[in-house]
Image (cartoon, rainbow over the protein chains, first blue to last red):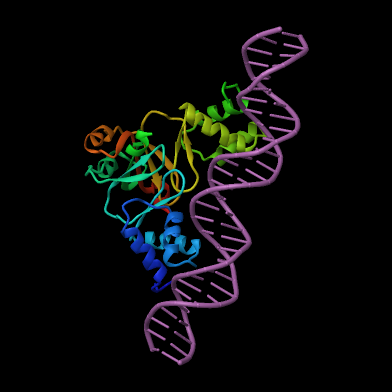
Length: 127
Length: 127
DNA sequence: TTTAATATTGATAATTGTTATCATAATCAG
DNA sequence: CTGATTATGATAACAATTATCAATATTAAA
C-alpha cells in the first residue's frame, strides 16, 4: 500500500464523519454508507476508518464497547454516558497537564493527555 | 444472585490483584490463578472480575486491546505506552476538572474525570 | 450434623468487534 | 489504452467477552 489511490467509498466515509456531531461506531458508519453504496462491505469500512486514523484525518475513541470515530481532530475531551454509552464532545478549553506531568514523571515520555468525563446524559436522566 | 456467597476463587483473584502494581488483563489473571487453581475456568475469572468491579473493590481500565484491572481504587491517572501497550500508574496529584466542567457543561451530569496519558515508556524508548 | 436453598463453578457454546485473506474490480501513470 | 498496483466485497479467522447449564460449594436453618 505504497501509494494512496482514490476510492469513492473512502471519500463517502470521510464526508459522512465530517458531517456528524456524534461519534459513530464502525457499524453505524456501515449502516449509513450502505444507503449510498448498498454493496459496501463492513471490512471496507473498517479498513478505511483505520486508514483515515493513520492519516490523521480522523481520530479513534476507545471506550467501553465498540470504538468510535471522530472527525474533529483538534484536541478536546469527551463525555461518556454510563447509561446509554453515548459520547459527546466537551469543547470547554482545559489546560493540558501533559507537559506538567512530564516534568515529575520519569517512567516514560508523555506525548498526549486524553480526558474522559463519565456521568449521565440529560436524555437518560429524564428516564 | 441476590446474596453473595464466599468463593475461594474470587478471594484468590482479589488477593492476586491487590499484590500487583501493574494492571493485568483477564487473561493474565487467569494464567496466574491457574497455578493455585489448575481447574479454574476463564469464565470464572471474567465473572469475578466484573463482580469485583460492581462491588467497587477494583476498577476496570479500558484501553486499546483487552481490558485491564486495577485494585487501586483511589483516583489516579494512567500512562499507556503506545508501543508495548503497558499501563502504568501516574500517582502525581492533579486537580480534577470534573466539578469545574460541570459548571459550564449542560448536556449531562459529570461524576468523574479520567485522564490517560499516552506516550512511550522507558523500556520501549531504549529499543 | 444433616438438609435444603441457592450461589458459584468449570466446560463450552455463542456473541461481538475487528482483522486477515484473496480473487475481482477500480484507479491512474505512462 | 495498457499495465501495474491499490481498493473492494465476500468471507473466514480471530480475540475478547458473555451466556448457558449441569454439577459442586457455600450457608442458613432444622
